[in-house]
Length: 271
Image 1 (tube, one colour):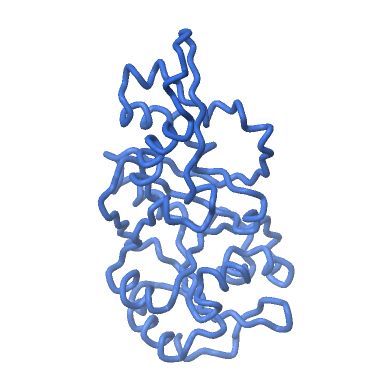
Image 2 (image 1 turned 90 degrees about the horizontal axis):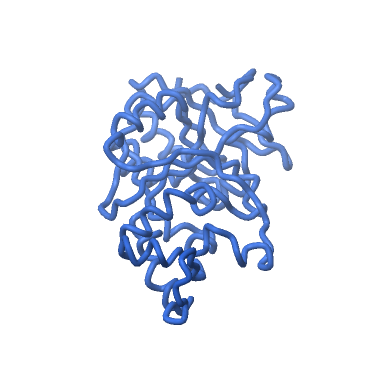
């Protein structure tokens, strides 16, 4: 898992605080979905701006874009929940070369989501995780995919279909049903695209639509490894190992040699 890994599709990575891992994720065996409207990307947290359009010659005078946007945004965002992960880049099988490409070696991710290197990175087997996800959410509407990264200019998106509301369809279906139809049609553009500044996250998402209640995923035996941040305390490491020691989980701690990620191969106390 940590060395000589060639398959860049085998694992997905979730950064979190040690306390969250101990008190909730590993204690309960579940991951809690996040609300789409509460991510840290302004494209997702700020209201989308929609323009009205018609194929049937309707008058658009009564459809003020600001009011239309305010009306429909809650349907697109507040009932959409997601689980987010990082992935590996292209791997050669030589960890001396590959470490900076690994999904668990992203310094900004450690700083932003891994409690400034004091947290952990949970490593899941992608195939098993996906199978469990499909089993648990087969009766719900979901989509799982890589996130694309694209910088869009304002001039380029003025007439983009994902941000144009078809008022013909809206008047026939009503606000809620129309929003549901629209998001399914344009889900890849709306929910799986971010600006290039986020590109190094190499994100993969599991997204569930039309659900406003708290949502949890039972990951069962898909947890394959745990990487401890360099600042993760001995006490937290001990608690996490105790919670998972019977789960065939591999452990390692990340160290930084100058600006290069490396491992604490000398630490064997958790084995």
